[in-house]
Image (cartoon, rainbow, N blue to C red; front, side):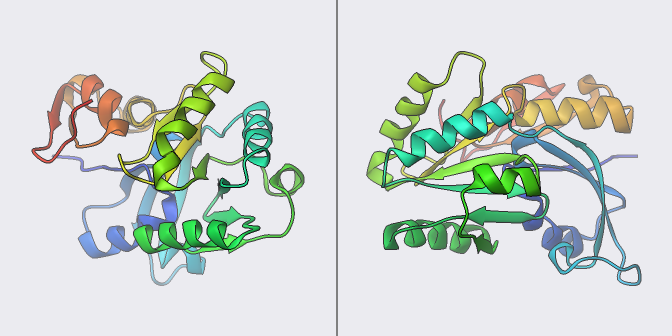
Amino acid sequence: KIQVMIATGRAASTVYEYVRRLNMPQPLPVVCSNGARGLLCSIDDEQETTMATQGVHVQELFSTPVPKSVVLKTLEIVKNNNQLVVQYYVGEDIYANPTTDSHRTLTEMYMELTGCKTKYVQDDFADAMEREGLPSKMLVLCPTEEQKQVMSMFQNRMEVGEATLILGSPGGWFIEVLHPDVCKGHGLKRITSEHLNIPLSDVVAFGDGDNDIEFVRDAGWGIAMKNGRDT
């Protein structure tokens, strides 16, 4: 028996359409938000589900949210740069508080890229965090020409080991902020060892991006795709 798993840097809500379309043996293990969350997904049109899960029953296996201190530091950095806007990933939802037209343009670009709807809120996430809980990840959106500089700024402001920072696709318009222990490789290890009872030595992993380095490295057989980027 071969167990297939989906692993993605994107939010859980982007996965459910593919769970339905692929219709693979279920429950289907899913690692999302670059390893911050692990799920088991099953198509269930009869059981009550939310609109966000598109008729897919979701069991959360683990969640490793961004620490509160990192959330607050990210907000502080962004407040001092009017070109930046943050998206917060909480459960099935993505929130943002755009205050300029350029902020809205950046969030709309991401919605077009992923097909995910971002919910616009008026309050600062520092307050909403107490109500909604900690995010699985944060996305700092920025003008494309500023992406590398924004990454460098965050690397300089964060202490070593304080957070995992991932550069979006080269020439992109965002960086990701995650819990310091989180990466796709972390998610792969947790879901295979803690929930599937499959040793990493028996895992084949396919990846093509910067966020796949640990994922491909830690699997028993890691395969870099032909269209992968040099890192």
